[in-house]
Length: 292
Image 1: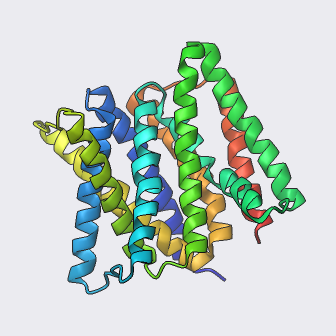
Image 2 (image 1 turned 60 degrees about the vertical axis):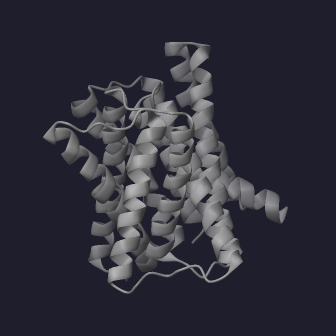
Image 3 (image 1 turned 90 degrees about the vertical axis):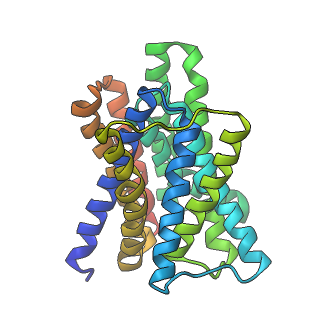
């Protein structure tokens, strides 16, 4: 029996992650470049998380070239590419759409593992793959019908990010890194944030100017609750409930994102987008049940 706090951790984690999409969209609407936002958010979040773990003497540090290379791979794929591509696409698509496309990560994990092992997944996972792909097609098709073929590239960019997250997940499972949990999360945020920061400086992008108190509070929320705490709660829930069961609750992230987007961003959704979202969420749930 999993403790009751497991469900509270899941609820808090997914709600905080969803708020990160909505707050990021607000900053992008205000004119902050997506790459600058990614660089600022995750460099600061990673540095704070590393310092906090160091003060508590709980920080795991890389001791071999293998660990250092592993952190570089995970940080690049799971922070720099995932959020870099996702935030750029968010400049043209809704926060809920980006969170839905990001949610397809478990679907790509199954596909990548099948290619690596050269084995077909079980029937339930094959059904989940088909349902998930149909959901993605409905989301993209509805968006293209509304905005035209020119928007197709932004959907593709968000899916590239989700596929990179999936690749990082498969790598983490198979690489045998000695750094795990909160420490892995802290390092990968810092590595990915610094990488995007270097790109932003090389492109001579304007920095973030937070003048109003409201902007300062929103950015603080983005860095601490929506980044450090959300992923920390998620890793804790993974330990309590296991990856197979816990991953099924990822569908809560786009649900909460959509619900928050309505009052905060005045968002509206086409019927086919809603059907596609339900299909993607169902696919993720089926994936988790097939893994038990």
